[in-house]
Length: 134
Image 1 (cartoon, rainbow, N blue to C red):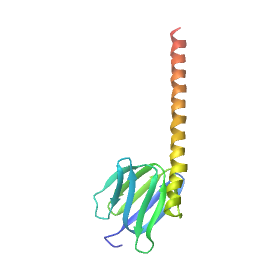
Image 2: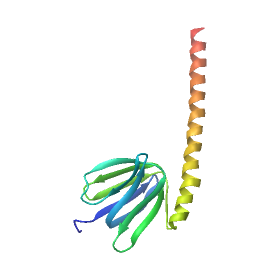
Image 3: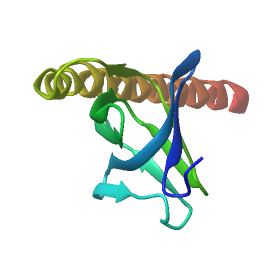
Image 4: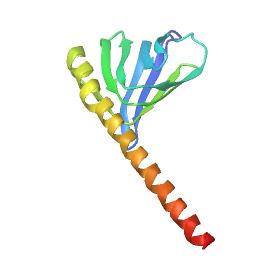
């Protein structure tokens, strides 16, 4: 393998979404903004937010993948991306709309469900403590 290239693996909870060799650069989106990674960059970990993930290879050029929340780990020449969901193969405009419509809406719904669940748990604990003190 060329020293100026990376290996990229995108993992979903239930399968390997992509295993790409000879990647020359990667661009990710975090809550702090977008960051680009080259093979010589120092090892790091980053939390990903829903957005469009970009990578480039000599054979395929620049490619785009819509990704949900997750984590990216760069260790040496290996870049591992673990996300809840990923979609590729569409043009950049469609992927951007998909992120807005599907991933962000799904994330908001999950947060609402978590809030309701937390309220139910608090109510249960309160009732249990009240029952126990009688």
